[in-house]
Image (tube, rainbow, N blue to C red; front, side, top):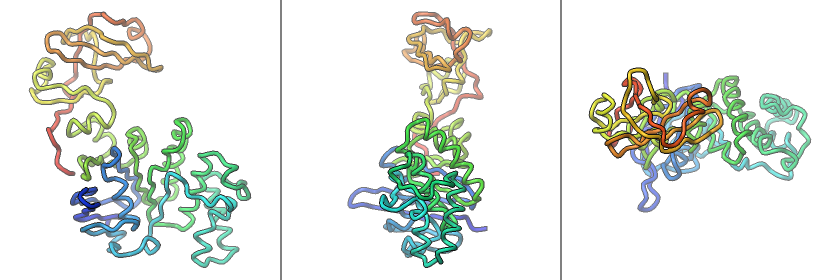
Length: 337
């Protein structure tokens, strides 16, 4: 079976700047796929090329088995949701959702029924007559989603759609987006710079850096087994151990990443001695920074906000141990996935 989206040899140059470098990527039908990376890493450019808003310098785009590289955006079986919603302020909610159907020549009665169905799917039944300025940010984002899905695209492209929302609303919309994707059963391609968002929502994640995919895998694979220091630092937080420090913990003498929740303090069988440099209260946890004896290195541990963690203080002596199965060996520079 052909993938929903197939990119081959995709290259995009803006003047002297290479935004995307020889990218090959397959996205499966029905997949929630996230493209994650910092600003300027190429992820949004790839999304715009899939949508047809940008033409690649070279390479091809195939959607559902059909080469669409030369096709205009309106001729592709996808729709796009943007961060700024792009709603028409003078139109009601129902008129905004109906707009694409009206342009497509759908009869009034049919487009009203489809628009009402789309609004119901994003939990906005009863909001049909409101104007965008009468809605909250999350409601406006749901209207934008309804307007996109009412056209029944085979894939939905989402360009940082939750970036303008506050944290609590963003977390609520993450749940709603995942539920919507499951109910629709269509391919979602989601661009974000928020690693928590990508890990929460995705079936697979492509991590971008300098126009290339540097790691591709499930959220668990990317988080538990980062391939290089960039990924270990960008996706979650890690302590990066130099080879000599890793060896002190009984690990192979290579550069290694360790997640703070995988570091154990004061284990019964001992470990590497150190002194607590900082105890940072985060609410559910304490983040504990330890200066290791004799190696000029620091390591960070997380402990839940109960028991021993509440009694730890700067200057306390502790031992630090790491389960070898929880340590991720790193490549100096992982090639594109």
